[in-house]
Length: 195
Image (cartoon, rainbow, N blue to C red):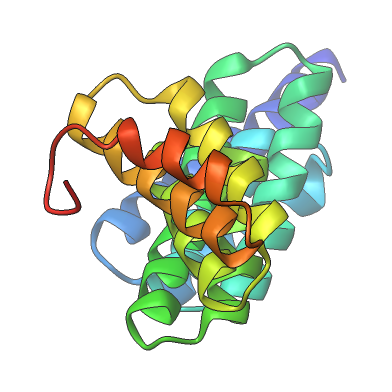
């Protein structure tokens, strides 16, 4: 019976690796089936949730992806697996950022704000903060603009990007009819197209 237990403990790994092979072959439905079977045998199998989330992302199922990746983050956190946590957060943040960018370009500013905020919860990035700053300015949420731009400046190292954030801060203060602070911010715009 020891051999039986050992074989049973290996089965989720075998199913996982079959799912991985199907995922690489772009058979995402087949892969998800194997990841689900692995999870059925080991309900806290963080890597299986991670790969299932990635397969769902490839299929364009953002809700399913988020559910799977949140589980990957939760269970990998319990077993002290920072690589799986990091990979899941990177996938989630990247997906939200990509969708925020699409919404932003289409001038759906409220959607862009929501999606960029979600992206930041997983992986804070200057790109997400800039989308937040510009989108908030576009819907006259000036305090939210200033907050997002300041957080972006804390993360950013490139001078032209810092100038972009200061430009948004200046516009926000201008929107608030605060000429003094608008001038202070605009003076910090030292490079880039807004100079």
